[in-house]
Every structure is written in C-alpha cells, then in structure tokens.
Amino acid sequence: MPRPHLYLLASLVVAFGISYFSDRIDPYHLDVLTGIGINIILAVSLNLVNGYTGQFSLGHAGFMSVGAYLAAAVSIFLAPKFLGPDGGTVWQQGLFFLGALLTGGLSAAGAGLIVGVPSLRLKGDYLALVTLGFGEIIRVIFQNVEKLGGALGLNGIPAYTSIFWVLAFVAVTIFTVTCLVNSTYGRGFLATHDDEIAAEAVGLNTTRYKIVAFVTAAFFAGIAGGLYGHFKMTITPTGFDFTKSIEIVVMVILGGMGNTLGVILAAVLLTLLPELLRPIAEYRMVIYSTLLIALMLVRPQGLFNFHLGKAKS
Amino acid sequence: MDWPLTQMLTVKNLEVCYGAISALGDVSFSIAAGRIVTLIGANGAGKTTALRTISGLLRAKSGHINFNGEDLTRLPPHQIVARGICHVPEGRMIFSNLSVDENLAMGAYLQRDKARIAQNRDYVFSIFPRLKERLTQAAGTLSGGEQQMLAIGRALMGDPKLLMLDEPSLGIAPKLISTIFEKIVEINRNHGLTILLVEQNARLALEISHEAYVLETGRVVLHGPSPELRTNPELKAAYLGG
Image 1 (cartoon, rainbow over the protein chains, first blue to last red):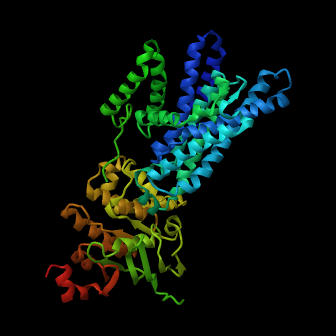
Image 2 (image 1 turned 90 degrees about the vertical axis):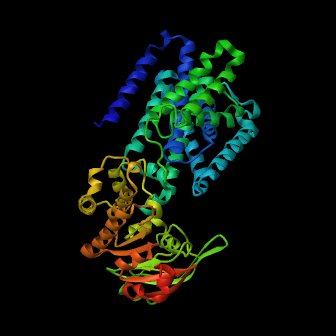
Image 3 (image 1 turned 45 degrees about the vertical axis):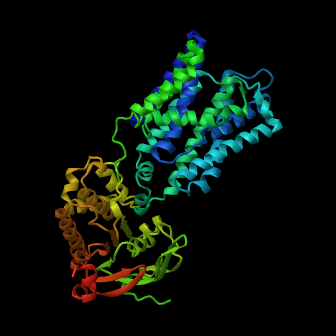
C-alpha cells in the first residue's frame, strides 16, 4: 500500500480513538476542535483552486451553504422515514448521516459545475466576480425558500456531527487534495497555475483542469457545510455570506497559496485566535485584524510558505 | 479545396483580429516536410500571432490551416498538439515552480507510450546535456538560456512532427544564442524534424533556414529561399542593417 493511503488509514484510526474518548474531553475544547476541523476542510479544499491551480474563487461559503442546507434538509425531512420514531441505532444513524453529507457534498459539486463551466473559460479577475455573485445569489435563494426556513433559517437539525466525522473528513480532504496535486494528472494544476499559455501549448486542456479543481473544492465545501449544520443544529442564510468566504480566502493566503501544510496551520491559527482573544472581548476584532495586517506585511508569501515564490516571467 | 500533398503545413488567407484590431490580414504560407522555414519581420508584424493561431491559442477570423491533409482551423490547442504540432511560446514560458524533470514530463503529457517517453527524454538529454545536470532544480532558477533549452526540450517530449519556435533568441546571452541555433539546425538535420521559426534577428534566422517569409503589418511582403533573401537589397536595408 502506498504511503498516503497508510496516512489516511492512520488518521481515521486516530479520529476514531479521539471520538471514543470524547466524553472525557472538555465540551468547549471539543467545540473549538470541531470548528478547527471544519475550517481545515474549507481552507484545504479552497487551496486547490486558489493556491494550486492559481484561480481566484470568492464563493466558497456559497458552496458551503448549498451543502449545509441540502444535508440538513435530508436529515430533517427524511430521518423520521428512514430511522423510525426512535432514531435508530448508532450505526444506522451514522450511515444515514453519511448519506446526508454526501447529498450535500454532491449538490455543492453540482452547483460548482454549473458555476464553473461558463466562468472558468474566463481568465483572471472575472472568476472572482462570478463566484462572488454566485455566493450572494445562493444566499438570497435560501432566504426566500419558505420550505427551508426563509430568513429565519433551518432549525432543529439533528446533532449528528461528532468529532469522529469531522476528523475523518479532515483526513479525507487532505488525502484527496494531496494525492491529486502530487499525481501525474495533478501536475496539470500546477502547470495551469505557472503558465496557462505554456500549459495549453503542451496540450493540456486547462479549462477542464480548472473545472476539476473547482468542482472538487465545491464538493468538500459542501461536506464542511453539512458538518457545520449538524454541529450547530441551526443554520441561517446570513451565516454563509461574503465575510465567511473572505475568512477562508484569508486562511489560504496566510498559509501560503499552494501549500497544504501551511494552509492547515493557518486554519488552526485563525480559528484559535478569536477564541484565545475572548477574554479581551471589546478589542478582539481590533487585535485580530491588526495581527492579520502585520502578518501580511512581514510574510506576504504566506506565514508557512518556505518554498520558492513564483519566479518572474 | 486541393492541398498540395508535399506541403506539411499550409496556411491559406489567414485573418486574425484582436477585438477590432486586425493583426493578420490575408496571410498565406506553406512549409514542406523536413525544412526549416522562418517568419521574419519587425515588432507587430504578426509573427507571434501566426504561430499562436496555428497552435489554436488564438482563433482565426477567416482562412484555413491545413496540417498533413487535415483542417486544424477550429480545433482546440490540446487536439492540435495531439496531431503533432508543438509550440515553444515566446518568452520561454516554462513552469517555473516545477522541476526540470517535471517540466519535461509535462511535455509528454499526451504521450501514453512509456518506452517512447524514455526514448524522447534520452534524445532531449543528448541535445541539451545541461538539462540532465539540472534535473531536480526548480525551472524558475535556471538561467535564461537554460530555460529556453528546457522549453525546446519540453516541446520535443511531445514527439512533434512540426516544431514551432517563437523568438528563441529573446533575452538570452549572445554566447548561448549561437548554441541554441546550432541545436535547432542539429534537430532538423539529424532527425528530419520540420521547424517553423519566428525570429526578430533576421540575419540569424536567414542563416539557418531554408525558406523565409517576410511579414509586414500582418501581410506577407516577400517570400523566397533564405540564401537568396540574404542578398536581397530591400531586405538588407530594412532588416539586416545595410
């Protein structure tokens, strides 16, 4: 078995181990850990688009909301039918939740395909604008669908998300993205990033590469959304607005575009920072923003990026 | 339409525009198999535009491009590469964050035959031994000349029938320019590879090519065997410095 597969297996075992002992962990810490995990999934998947492939998407929260709403809808409307009035056994619940998450992920991927196919033919800033617009459109749609709670959002989502699911999907996300970019096929993402014209000249279909990256990222954003909804038990359209997208983009930039390890560390740091600053509540956002500015001034190539920067062409 | 069969590539009445601005108006030329043909001309004459249109990076407004009896005019770039036309773009566009080895591997992107890839790699190393020394180095850290060698090597990995070179002398140390041009001749002579060369350095281009087309503001103004054009008084005055 090749090494990355071993890592994946080991991570899944660790995830299971942690979740086994989760009742001994402080609930607040567990909450923060869950938040970190969800942000890692979001940031690592967005890094595939914004980092490795060199595109600029500003709509990650939009895909997250598609996943969150669809997965929550499956749980709310279908759980009584499938699991019966008593809620089913742990295994039945787990399987059902996996189905709900995948529904959310695949719907987000579908949305990614619909947005991606026309807009990824464009180069540069246009994609940022289109994805930005998509995020807003999707928010307005969810705000106006009465069946999904409208502006009040969806409440009473079953709390299926456990630390096991979060850690397991963190592992799967990192595994997928790493294997994808390190494969022969995946070198095409880096080539598209380095030089689109040269990539086309050696025979790459760069549009297809961009779409694969975009749809894969959307899928994992959808999974993260599903986990988020079943963790908070309530979701509102405003929870997935533009600021959320920016937050994820900041993690990618701070971690160093196209550097998975850096992006993971940045996601951990940026989730922990507001928590650590909680005691000085009034100054929290001020310090948070100041730190961000300072970090960007000191390390514009990304906090944890030690690789060669993009050489001048 | 009847295409002369001895010609590998025939471009007929090609017209290309950037928005409202015409870059090529009614350009026709052809390349016979096994020859080095050059397009020369000043800045903005349309040389690069012609190459980019042939490789599908740009769309022609009208006209035809025929390669070995097949019409390429509306094909996307990756399908044109698959037919055997490899383009070395202007300014050495290599993948700077990938290693030399990975850049070469990208060149063989459409090639599925492993043995053939290994064979092509050895061939590239025999022409540019320098690349073998720098195999694991990030391509962005190579010198300008080495990057140009890599760009040509990468194109050769694609197993081309026609190699198109866009300004291989651009921004390279003079000493290396002659090396690279010698290699171009070598590739053509020893392996019979057909080459379409775009070059601002007209003197150099006429020295190594068999045939030349002179472009001026999107039109072919002169065409003939290169040795003949070298002594053409008009051309001498305009491009070769008297």
